Length: 470
Image (cartoon, rainbow, N blue to C red; front, side, top):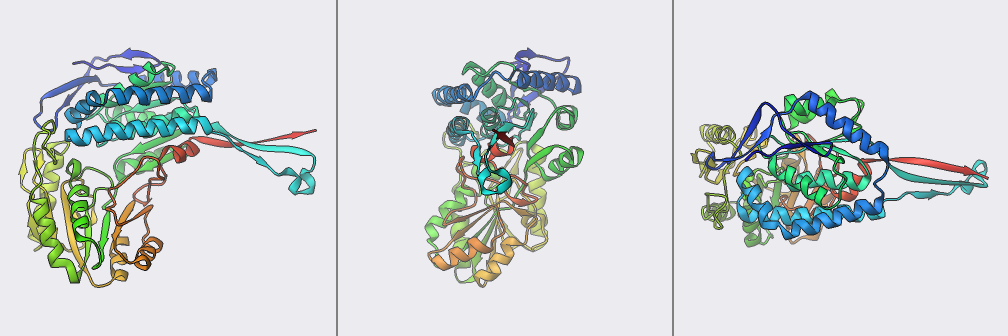
C-alpha cells in the first residue's frame, strides 16, 4: 500500500520510496515517499503562505480540534491496528494511545478557546498614567515538528494540536519507521475542517528531510522528540530558532520499606515493560531499601516472568518486539555486559526483534544498562540504606525527566519531591505514568521544554505588548 505524503494540501509521491515494515515479523505495512530538501522547501513555503493569510481564527481552530477528537474516538480500532502494525505496539496499548490522543486533541481545543493575554496596569507608574496597556499571544510562526517512532499518534498530536491552537502552520516530519499513523492523523484533521495546506507532512530520513526542515530559515520553532544526540545536533544547527527538545531518560523509582509492595510490583510490571520498555519514562532504575530488597527482587522477578511476549495483534500480548533487530541486538549486548560484570540477570533472551523481559540485580553503576537509556524491556534493581542515599542515586544521572517514590510517610514524600532533580516527581506511582494535560518534560539530557497543550501553546506563541495612548 502506497501512502503519499502531503504538501500544501496535495498528495506527494517520489521516485524513491521507504518501506514501512512490521517490527514483529517484517511483513510490509506501507510505502511512503522518500522526500528531500526540495520538498521541505515547498512545504515550508506553503506553511508560510497559510500563516500570511491570517484566515483561521481561534473559534474555527477549536472547532476543528473538537471535531477531530470526535472522529478519532469513532475510529479507535482502525488507528490502533495501524499503530500495532507499524510500531509493534501491543494492540491493548495501541488502543490506549489512541484514547490518549483523543484527550490531547480535546485539551488542545480548550487552549484554542481560551488563548488570550492580560491587561497591564499602566496607572501603576506615573509615566503610564492615562494609557491602556495589554499583552496578547501571537503565533510564533511556522513550526517544524519532528516526531519519534514510539508513540506515532499521540506524540504527533502533542505537536500538532497545540500548534493548531496557537495559530501556527506546521511542517511535520514523522519517524521514517512509523509514518502512517501521523499521515492518517493529518488526514483526519483535514476531514474535521483544517485548511488543507495548514499542515504538510514530509516523509523521509532525518538526514534528507529532518535536517533541511530544522535548519530552514523560514521555520520559527522546532519541536523535536527523540534521541539526545539528534536533539543536540538540531539545537546546534538552529541556534537562532526556538528549539523544544523532549529527549531521553533512565527513570528511577524509590521504594521505601513502608511501601505497599503489591502496588509497587504491579506498577513495575507495567511501567518497566509496556511497549517493551520503549518509552522515555519507562521505569528503569528500581531503588529499593535494603530491608525489603531481597523480598521485592524476588516478587519483581516472579511478576515479570508472567509477562506474555509475542505478536502485537494478539489480544493476550503484553510485550511486543523492539522497533528493529538492531535495537534488540543493542539491548542484548548491554545485558551481556552486565552479566560479564557480575550482575545477576534473569530473562533477556533475544529472538529476532523480541527480548524476554529482563531484571538485572544490583549492577555496577558505570554500566550502560544502569547509566544509559535502555529503551528495552529491562529494569535494574539496586539496594540503598536510607532515603538520603536513594535520592543521591536517583539524581546521579544525565537525565531528569520523571522519578517515582513509593512510601506511606508524608514527610519522606515531601522530602523526595523537594530534593529529586526531575521535571516530575510522582508519589506512590511509577515514573511511567503520564496524563496528557500535565506539564511534561525534564532537565539536563531529558530536554528543555514542557509538553501538554496548555504549556506547548505558550511555547508556540510570543507575548506582544500593545499600548494605547489617549
